[in-house]
Image (cartoon, rainbow, N blue to C red; front, side, top):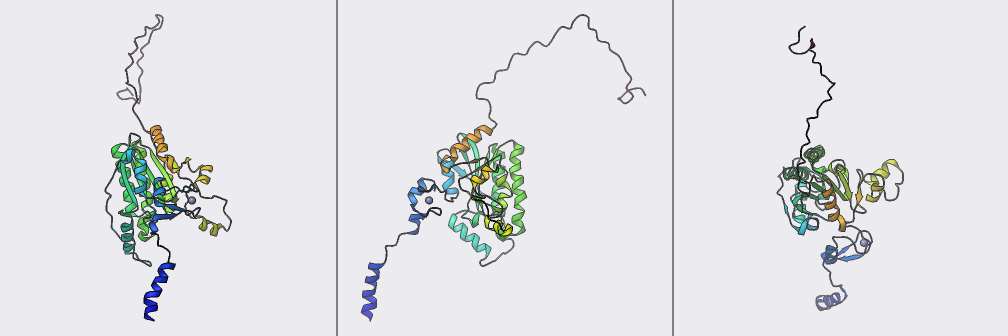
Amino acid sequence: MNWLSNFVRPKIQALVRKREVPDNLWTKCPKCGQMIHHKEVKVRQYVCQHCDHHLRIGPDDRFPHLFDDGEFSTIELPEVAADPLKFRDEKRYIDRLKDSRGRTGQQDAVVVAHGKLGGHGAVIAVQNFAFMGGSLGQGAAEAIIAAAKLAVLQDVPLIIFSAAGGARMQEGILSLMQLPRTTIAVQMLQEAGQPYISVLTDPTTGGVTASYAMLGDVAISEPGALIGFAGPRVIENTIRERLPEGFQRAEYLLEHGMLDMVVHRHNLRETLIRVVELLANRPPSGEVIALPQPDLEIPLPRNVTFETEQRADPDGPGGTP
Ligand SMILES: [Zn+2]
């Protein structure tokens, strides 16, 4: 028995067992189901070569394709109280945070970077769906606020790539407070006369749609992105009606006037440069030459005379009553 179980069985198992492929070598396209090699998909900026589906990506895969020569600097973000409510569901919130921080190498869901975009300065914030569903808590909101402040300080446009399931429920009311806070943050850009461009990526829902994501001077989205407040399943269950085809998808929203553009990921950088150039308050490209002042002394016709009449103004200062 020993010989059979210790020697023969492992040999047979080794023959039968498939060679294990490391999980991270291949990615399965969630739309067409085709296997795509990690190297190829990375080069294609995580756009499926079979069906053109735009996979979800984080800041590490976005920033190098956006900034000039892939050069940018990320900024340090303000620290916030880690778990103010000591929240726990199946897992403690603090453990979920640790887990997401370990996997993404990020402090929270939003990362902020600045650099050059087509020669213009720009601040770009990217929300990572892989970090607790990109949810908007205090940490993510502080990042958005820091990005807006930096853009005002540098006098450059702000671009936010949003991707979120909504507010971070583990922070309760504190997460809802971030909606007005981030709204005021992007308003600062308006007051400073700098453009704020919102790029809505798959998926942008809940509190993020209800705040900064929908407030861009220009609203851009990637093809096929899910954008809405409540998800389609929730709406369908509430109104008990079937929703139209493509409901809450970027193309549907564009058709109904909620977006300005739906742009392929491969054309995003060029589009953003064009928009920034159109909106940025640039000095004139040529030298400004002052025009010679015209002679303002125009002689009056001879027969016109001015009568100076002193009238008593009862309300005026110094007038006689
Ligand atoms: Zn595909």
